[in-house]
Length: 283
Length: 310
Image (tube, rainbow over all chains, first blue to last red; front, side, top):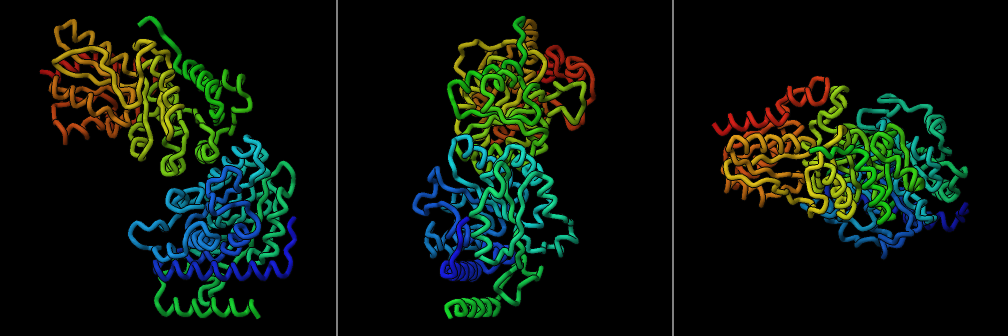
């Protein structure tokens, strides 16, 4: 486990705000996008790329690198924001989001965006792909790890449970899944649309080692995610309790912001709010 | 026609041979290894044989992930379960992600004749060929199967290979130069061209022989690769013989005949007759009887060609 000092936590919080500002920059360019899930997952992404994962932005295909799979591909604004901040590509590319043939589409494309490992978008694909990566890395004797972010609504896809069973059966303890449990999906509260409860027991029953954390607490994210495998021989899952659209008070916990069509006024308010959060950290 | 070989056993032996030459080849089983002729592979390379149980959506993603690390997965199971069932995984994880995975659908066409429409695979070519960048191979005999396995292993990119179940006659020379995307003229003729593929190539060949005895010169082509289509060979046949008949053990919608028609209708339209299954779920029964019922035995094909020629 990697302990996070107060100073490190503050530094990470600053990066997280910057990443949120990058998301806003994308929104200013494209005017529409899956903001809710991007902002519920962005603290996890920030921790992964700036404290947890072994990656080199100058060598995105380095064979020994850790892999990241955004199974819930619609949260890609957060991934683009984080990859740009980490130096995988220039921030200027963020301004092309929404333009014809932009490298940054509404779902990520591994052949267009340096650092993106998979083409996700259709839900229920990422965990299998990540499992295959984890299996291949083990077969090659590499100690690299594979990290996944899944949505909680996504868990209704049956293919995930095929993958969950196989990852456990094959003892892929180099695999860590974050469930971004923001509790909402398009039609309403996730447990009302299609309940996955009891979520921890469900993963446990599939042979996974489970922890539950606050998905916006960077200290909790880092200290748990650097402690894997939680149990030798088992894949690990962190159920991260999050808030949809976290950081934008007017959009938090609102289904309407699953996909946001932003007005100039909205964007100005969002900018002010993020500036305030940033100011709060530096105090 | 006396040299009959089991397509699955043939496939399995070829895979072992390919795996000896290439340590990156791994076999993926969805509780399907023994029925796919992969027992020798499992015995020879136990660490490279990965069992998943009956999980055909999952194995596509796992295979894509394995391929990102340099492995060359061969995913082998009953044809509809690795094509129709996990179609979106095939399309996105293998096709869109351009992963070096080889999917082999066995007991394809009507060859699971007794098990009915859930297990017969008549739409696989039509649906898989819509995926950009996926090579589709439908070997016409056991020699083709061996060569297709080696060619697929050497090819970088997703490949679908369709094989049957009953023993197949050897039609091709063991040392002929198989090339993905290149059809083979098996018999010359100037009156009509019969283009056959896969499990019913032998029936198309029989039809060509019957026609020859009746004084009709049928050019016979083994179109072992559906995608990319050998356009040059098709165009030459259309120009030189003026009439095309296609023979396949699959749906007419989207199959080989459809591929050729799509091409010729813009390049060089000629009268065509497509022989295959037309928009129905097929019955069950003995394989050869089913083929006869659907007009896919040599004598029936010959008769259809004669009627077509008028």
